[in-house]
Image (cartoon, rainbow, N blue to C red; front, side):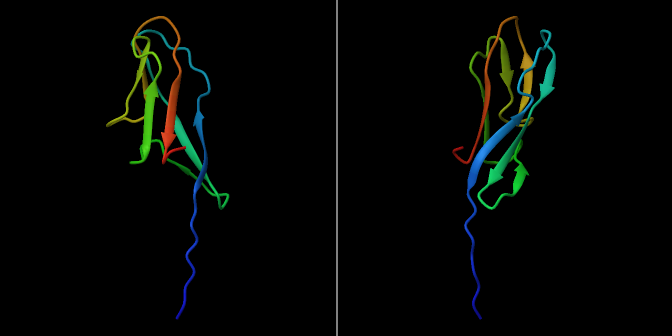
Length: 88
């Protein structure tokens, strides 16, 4: 018997909620979806390989542990929230 193995790689990652406006102490859950080389997609928001970060944690933080992707507003201002998944 023979079998074929196809290697499928992550080609892109999109984050749903391209822009948010939150009052101080409000929260919002973001979602990340990976696109693969075989044209399939998968929600990876809380996956082991997913990582979230905020460019300005004094304005808003993003959970990278138990509630991955949960943005919590802390103060007035702006920040960029980013996600990565398996290096993408």
